[in-house]
View 1: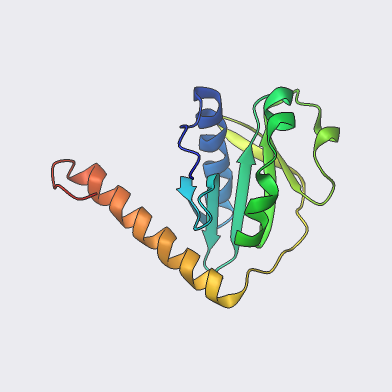
View 2: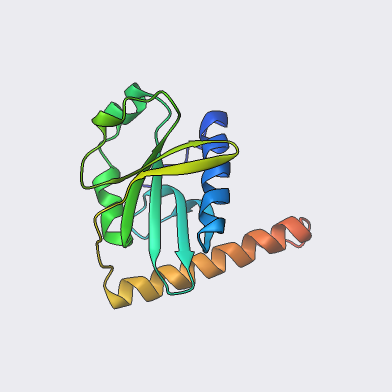
Length: 149
């Protein structure tokens, strides 16, 4: 069952800053994309080479400690990161996960993620899903009354 809770205002602000940072690094991004396993990623990015990154936003220590689902994202990306606000105790974040500190205006990469290779068929399915969702969102934004999903 998908996690259907929307991003909190704080998480939305961090997602905005991450989107800016990733765009400068050559990635196109989406927020709140539901994966085939039913999990919803906070931010997913894809670059021209097809590299897929997933970023899980954690706004508080309680949020971080309460999250037991993040390992389920690792099979759907080449690199997995956490993003936290300034002041978050970064030593809590697992060493093999990448780490960003972000705010509404940008993000700083503190630690690179271990590389995880997505298998070819899953990569193709994710690229198609990303493109379809992005096109649907663009269409809905430009023509909210078109009747599409």
